[in-house]
Structure formats: structure tokens, C-alpha cells
Image (spheres, rainbow, N blue to C red):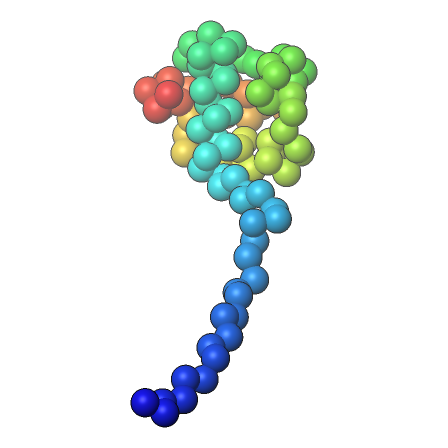
Amino acid sequence: MGEHVAPQTVRRLPTTAKRPPQATAEAVGRRLLDVIVYTKACRTGSRLSFDDLAEASEVGDWKMPDFKAACTYAAAQGWLRIDGDALILTTAGLAAA
């Protein structure tokens, strides 16, 4: 009896729930590869222009930094070759899809 319990305050940490998480370069690179292989039905050596990709609803809604990150990542992995304004699917890209 007679114990004094001090009220405890609950401190909330700031959250990032207001902003959607940014996609990683690997995730958007894999999505780009999926669109090229499955949606556009490309095979090894197929050329796809940026305009052809823009027609795909999944890619057409992307922001430019996401698209650049996807292309850069896919090229770094050896999945695609970038030739001017076209992407060329490699054997490694077809195998990775």
C-alpha cells in the first residue's frame, strides 16, 4: 500500500507510412525483364525499342528514374544490351526470367 506509480508516457517514433517504399533497382530490373520476356514475348536477340516498351501498361506507368534504374540493373546483370534507343534480350536474360 502507498506505492506511487508514475504515469508512463508513450513516445511514438516517426513512421514512413505516409510514403510508399521505393522499389529497388533489382525489383524494377526483374519487372522489366518479365515484361520483355512474358508480355512482349521476346526471345534471345530480340530488339525492343523504348516506344514499344511504353505501350506495355506495366512499363508505361513507370517514372523515368525507375525505368533508367531497371535498364541499368538489367544491363549490369547481362540480361539486356542497350543499343541506342533499343533493348536487346540476351541469353542470360532469357534464362533469368
